[in-house]
Length: 517
Image 1 (spheres, rainbow, N blue to C red):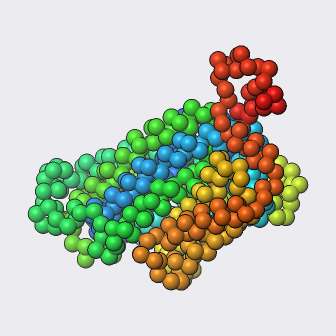
Image 2 (cartoon, helix red, strand yellow):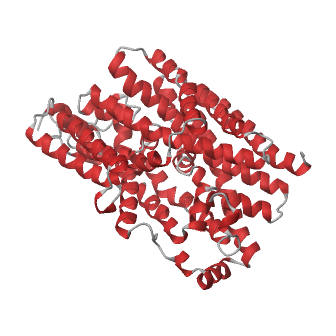
Image 3 (tube, rainbow, N blue to C red):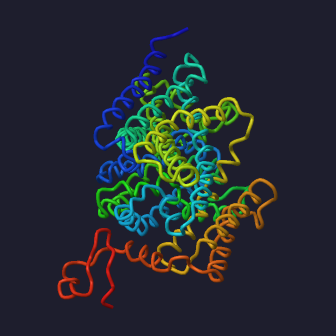
């Protein structure tokens, strides 16, 4: 029976979907959607507000309202590993971001593999990185589809079937990603980020006070009844393995192509640095998220839940909260899921076309034709993820666990491109191939030595092979390798160059001429 409460609770998330679609569509005029630079990089004109939410909201996915509370409810303080790697993960972007932005403006890069394949002069490196990126993206998209399907099905009390609950939000995402590209993703993330912040803090403070009389009494009750819940670590995981997950996740954080690519979108380098500096203010969202799960530790029997991820929906429906607030919660959970999904869909089609199709099959493709192919790939990309989410028997959990292990392998190649002119194409290809094989081996075939994250061993293999092979092979174009390093540095200030204009000239992107040296 459909009640008034059900209509309220279901209607609010559906209204949010309509509003998100409107925001996404109205953003299409802010950049040229027929050019690759406009569609992928937002015309390199994104300011601090949008950049802050793009980098923050797109990181907090279905985990924000489902997985996070589920972890603190079932695992306790072990969930703090997310705070650890999240706090350090953006630091590399403070170093790399400005360098990437300078090179993007100078040489037209819009993707991660586009830069590295140019530096190492290898279309096969571009294709290999594209395959690894999309292989890492698909599990995350699958998880987001399952997340939104669960959210809408729960909100409607089964009125909207699971298959349709997973389809509707992704149709909205596909439409505004296709029509508005990066600008649609950016402004949608602003909306989604604001909703996440407001609702997470409201629920994270409201539930402990409603159920326990405050945060301190809540933790006192947990300490008295289940003190192990306040200890970092897991019985089934050694501290060595736990630490390896933090290290791999922190180093791989901005190696994710959809996050790395945002450096190409910024209007200037100060925007990138300010984003990194301000990012922790959003990451504090993890505090109320974990408090939500803790609120249920002494009040909810785990046996009544089909999954720990259901703890927040269970709490808000069981407490008899006003239907409007429940509807807003489901809308916030939907926002958290979509803020990651739209970034990944946008990056997937960009990477597939720019880094795989173009170098291997049509290197002379025109700018408009390339952008058109990206747009044509949007619905097939969503379709593949939707199939795996609803119909495929493949277990996506181990694939998702391997995702960070896949993208962290790009890090040694990135360091070589920025700091080591002696790094070679053969070294880069060999290193990435070796690291990928090791990661796959220890993820799916044999147990990882010392029980460490498979990506940790992959990163060691990538680094060792990359460095060793580079030392015994020749750089194809040493001058170009030096140019990349030079152009990635900041341009000299006026004070530095005023007396040396005859010998050093600053150029667009920070390159310098040293002909007189």
